[in-house]
Image (cartoon, rainbow, N blue to C red; front, side):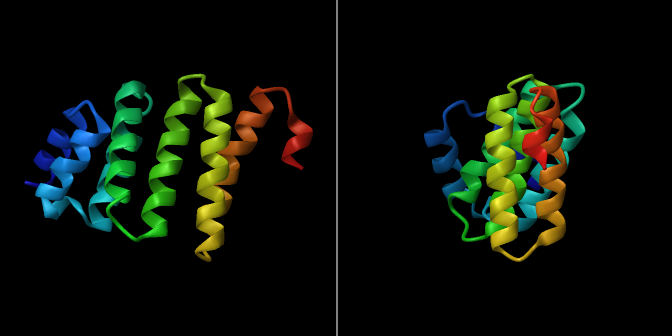
Length: 133
């Protein structure tokens, strides 16, 4: 049932409508749902990158209804990863920075470092290796 609700959420086009749907389906407003959405985005990111981005952006909508920095950071990193693979490197860099800062602010150094790994790759692709130091 949860996956069905997630699929319905992702298929809704407008964030405003997604928010209304999530508010009406309280089962979606849960950090476990965000982790599931991150997993779904990870599975889609190589073969269906635009879908992975839609999943990540939908997760961010749900995060707006949660008070959970880890869920926000995880969703932001999922968005960064999709943007990265879509070649939207400046946007990916911004999202990786945001994810890393949120993770660090919540005391999760390991996840913050994982976000930095993506950021370093983007900086290399942008020809800015020294910015990674």
